[in-house]
Amino acid sequence: MKTLIKNGRVVTAVDDYKGDILVDGETISMIGTELSMEVDRVIDAEGKLVIPGGIDAHTHMDMPFGGTTSADDFETGTLAAAHGGTTTVIDFAIQLKGESILKALDTWHQKASGKTAIDYSFHMIVTDLPHERLGEVKQLINHEGVTSFKLFMAYPGVLLVDDATIYRAMSLASDQGALVCMHAENGVVINEIIDEALKKGHTSPKYHALTRPTKAEAEGVNRAIALAEMAGSPVYIVHLSCYDALKRVQEARDLGIPAFAETCPQYLFLDHSHYEQENFEGAKYVMTPPLREKWNQNELWTGLKMNDLQVISTDHCPFCFKEQKELGKNDFTKIPNGGPGVEHRMSLVYNGGVVGKRISVNRFVEITSTNPAKIFGLFPKKGTIAVGSDADIVIFDPEKKMTISAKTHHMRVDYSCYEGVEVQGVAEWVLSRGKVVIEKGKYTGKAGDGKFVKRSHINLSYGHPSNVRQEMALARS
View 1 (tube, rainbow, N blue to C red):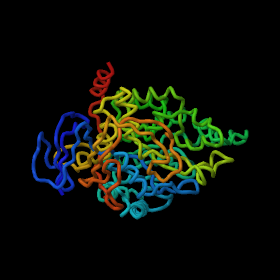
View 2 (cartoon, rainbow, N blue to C red):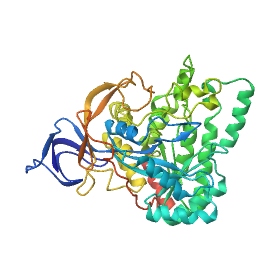
View 3 (tube, rainbow, N blue to C red):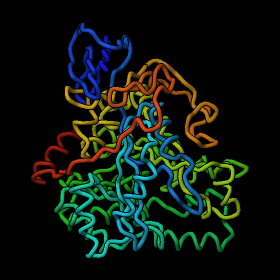
View 4 (tube, rainbow, N blue to C red):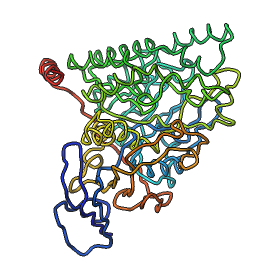
């Protein structure tokens, strides 16, 4: 199948030009101007942006949590992602304590196989890493294409691991060309604060946020970076939510430490006031980390602009308000943590970033596609528009507006965190490895179009710290 995309404004992390793209099978075979050849299909992209498909490096499909399971499975979740212009997700397989890591990977392969609308890969959540299991981790990295691992400083008794385990994982990752992703919160102290709140009868949703202070996140980030420095390893902080935590990343990067971090749309566009809604509505926004005070948003945008934050992912982990969120009606600790977001990431970031004049259109592509591809071993197969790259292409209308609503979204969840919000910038056509899966906003693909993607080894070393320090100082001057 040959497809010719004509007359579009092609934008990558570094390019911005008018051009045509020839897609031959699953890859891009030619880029030029005024291309003319016999093809099966011509798509006119006049007046549109032609960008690499979005990569959401943090999703949780079909994830068991808090006595229930996230509302989107791999079929509905990836279909929703495709509608929003995302063509690859990296989800999380979860090792149960005492379980084989390879068994956990098999379980998640079974959950996803034959269901996805777009390509996917896995991080591995590690909850148990004795020395005798290190060989399994090496097999994942070197043979299974799983080159990133997530460890938790939160959720004692369920997901939390101790500092020795984190150091052990980081040392192995550094040696084997992998990356450790950290959920950085001081979960042990948070549990003490939660116990104090419950004893006082504080059970409403807002106490989820009030018992998880920004200092607990900042302490976790600081400790994660210190452990990574001792292990000689890079580190990636997931879902960073506040300035207190961002400061720790900035300080580390200024010293040449390879510390990387993502934030999420909810921390850029929503704030703590949403927890004050009546009739338990605040439960819709119970996620971890929680929403913060609004002033943090400007600091996060500055972090994105200055490259102290490199990625915007969603942490898509939806639970329906009815039946699922309501499990915690009399106790905020029983509200399943997480919210929906995979479908609207690209439009929200374009509207808030590019239309809002906070970032350039190139930076928009970089933080939603190119950087996650580079950081997680997918580049240049994914994350750019270049000859030989996968034809994961989004034709994006920069002028079109839409109103976000649970009535029209494709996620299998009964509410939207952005209900009634109007955004400018909408994915009109979406190609996944050359196949049109979204055509003028309509889904034309089928379950199973997506494939599992093995990722390459990861190298995120900075070079000599003093040089990096000088470069960062110049960037900020």
